[in-house]
Length: 582
Image 1 (cartoon, helix red, strand yellow):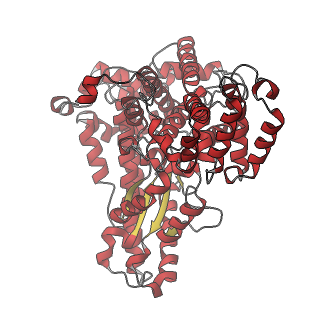
Image 2: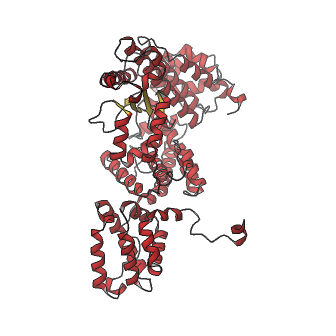
Image 3: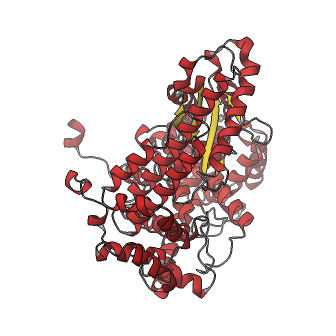
């Protein structure tokens, strides 16, 4: 955004408006703002005629709204955030709710009026959430100190919450918060800065602060609410308190952390409290999130996660627009996010440039390094922006945390008017996007049992089929096959390996070398997943086994070497002598 544009008022920058769906909502707003320019009146009446929630905010905040329309929206947002703080705990709940109300109205009008693009909208919502968490945490810690409930802590510790810090997760962590989103937080404290003898009492105090923070943000009062707040992303939430020390949290992730938690930490960001302690904690978790070797096992984990979500939410089956879940359903927002985050997990351990919190910069980085082709990245970027924009329209109608398309014609007509389009066009364009996203992302996750021609009979491949079958049975006792997951992945690989061996000059020798390779592996999940996801690597492995048994033996003890060949140009033509000399 240029400086000149940012200095113009919200009213001067209005470029579009919804169509009023409910004519009865128009006259009160039109009369109240009759003196404003026609473009602004169209925005206000069109918005009120579609969204009862926003119509109510306009009535309640009419005087403030006049001032906001006459100022740049960036300045209005900054003023809202400035007024949302303060350590007066008694006044803070109302101050935060007024800030939320005004920010919700400002953001909606800037979005609906074409004043702000998606990134500015989600960024503004995230800044509000950050400010609310920061103000709440600071005031609550100050209150506990004043009550003498935090031993060894003084007023000097208020500024960094006495070592407590809050990690913003999910869309809040990435700066991508949606219009009516809840916020996902993990609250921890740095126990190393306190006397060990005070640990138990401090822990109880920090738990109280966290519980009160959730109430402060989530409770619905006459002034409304601030943000619905979810703490369930913390380690083992069914048995752990709402605020835990960093050391046990680290132990949990090192020993029990799962792939979905690794994906969640891609977006993690310290947003309140002792920010340096939060950053240090994330630094220590880096080996957990970002594996040193290419991590193709993450593909199956993400695929399984997607299937569980669809099954749990009842989202399997054919694509039907009425009632479709724009976030979790087929071709939806989550498919783009899973596609992007899984590729980040696979390769981000070796390339720090891929460790982007936000979805679209991550897609761009993946495309820039050849992990996603430019056209796919471009299509997914455009579809993600359109999906998120429509998601905001759905949520603005009634300030509801919903991602489902309307199930009836009346609801679809209202949404279409809110988007300034026709219902049939809205449905057709959405269907095109959903089908395109699904077509682009599903093949990456889909594990097919039969990928090619039928596998030849063992007797047609090997000169000594009985010995070959005995060798393959013996593989089950190797360390690489200890886990059920490794065995399951290898069952998918085995037909592909046999097809390739059928083309070898000495299939029996190739099988013997493959057994030597497998016997050197300390574990199987990672390397089998790598081979499963890269057919060219299977070709290379069988070629090596068929021609260079000693190299196969070396690879079994040094499987990380395979990482070096997984790049966008490894299997391409060799560079010419001029390039090599340079």
